[in-house]
Image (cartoon, rainbow, N blue to C red):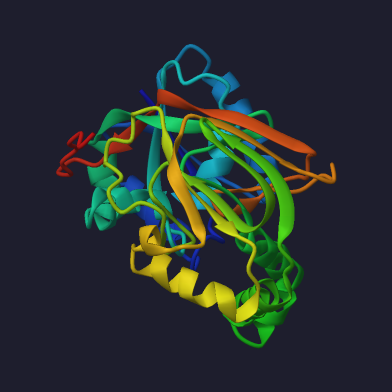
Length: 308
């Protein structure tokens, strides 16, 4: 097996690439290559190139970075035949790993990942790309868009662009009118936030479903659609998600779905967020949950039980 380590040294707090290189130098029992990513836009193409180099070989790809790095790597894989995916979490939130109920820190052991075994998990596939944990639009995508524009303010403080983006989204973002089809759920009207999640959590601490299994290979994802709200009215809903009690909200439509269709009623293009990464704008997003699609490596010592 070929072990490919894709390292995004700018993820999270950064400064971990040397640690990875030094640790791997002690592993003389595996054939490995370290690939340093430069720009986020080129990661998927870089993955395709490296897979073409090792065509016909069994390959394990290690995503060393945050949720966005993992998402971009997945979008560079056309088929998972002979390919396994491992997540070495160096991002700020690493949301998908929260389904492992307290075992997410064990993914930070390179040796445990190298000696781990793949388990099949679902993938959210759309007509404009894939993601493994969450697909969303609304306050969070407005926040991300503003955050990207204000990154330069981080010279004042690391949290400044994040805080300014959040204030802009909550107090100045306007609810948009969408047409949504999620299996039996139909919605047409203004809403503040739409989230579909394969792992139950998004945004670091926003729970849509606290009971998602560590084995999410069930071919469905949880969703929540919030009615139109602005400013302080959204704060109680955010608090409910923080507490894992969004089901108590009278402003939320909650359920499970295998199919996805979202568009704006005015026909304008809009961007979805995949695993926290804002995508290009399109007029319509269609998709489905592909069950048991991704061979996802579970570290040695982490129990993997199906709770479905």
